[in-house]
View (spheres, rainbow, N blue to C red):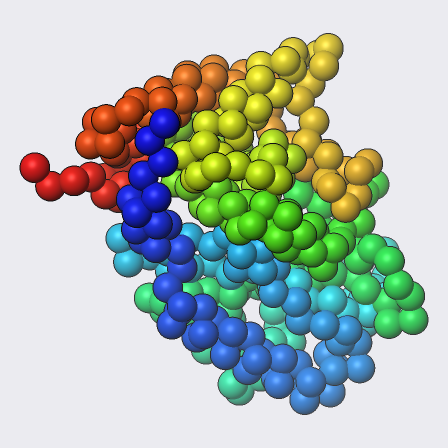
Length: 315
């Protein structure tokens, strides 16, 4: 078996978000927290400004081609005490985002950065990164799940525009999986996000949280190498996706910290079946890469699998 430890280490270094950019993102988050704590309207409602997404989960990728990094931030506020939530119409996520965007836009330190987007309020740091702010209803006097805008298409106009969410607990699950796999979880997620973006048609690509959760659920605690982990995880994921059938046993990806939530609820049956087909072929290819005894040939096969960022020996 070809483990190619040095090649995979170099590949992972290329993929991971550069430390200097992460420092700048965290400094911007600290600036936001200071602004929120001094805002006479938001400060009494503020519970937390929590970094979430891939940066909080330890799986962030370095953007390609000079694009900006998108960092997710959950603004946990006691929205039930806010002015918009005094009316039924104001409790719609659209109204909440309008109110939040206007409030942040009135802050002299933030006003030039604020952009109101469809599903978030963005703080823009041109050419480097942006913070996508997602409001959460998190009553100060209560514990348990926060309420965040539903990701389901059309849900904002229905009866359940807000759904329970446990961003802290999910980040803790990622950290636990990384510890129990001796760091292999975060590396495998990064590798497979690269595979998704390089090797899958757009229609077959799962969202990051779906892919990341499936990796965490498919990865054994002990694997011999990155190549071995990829081979095992891809086969497990492919078999799981292939076992699903539209209308009968649709693929579900339960949130590990909220089991009644299906993270794949917005993933269409056609996309799941397309993903299953590609994942099955990719699992076979990964096994061939791993089992090829010639190191140079194995490296070339992995480079074909991942694209030009995977290092190959210079002839």
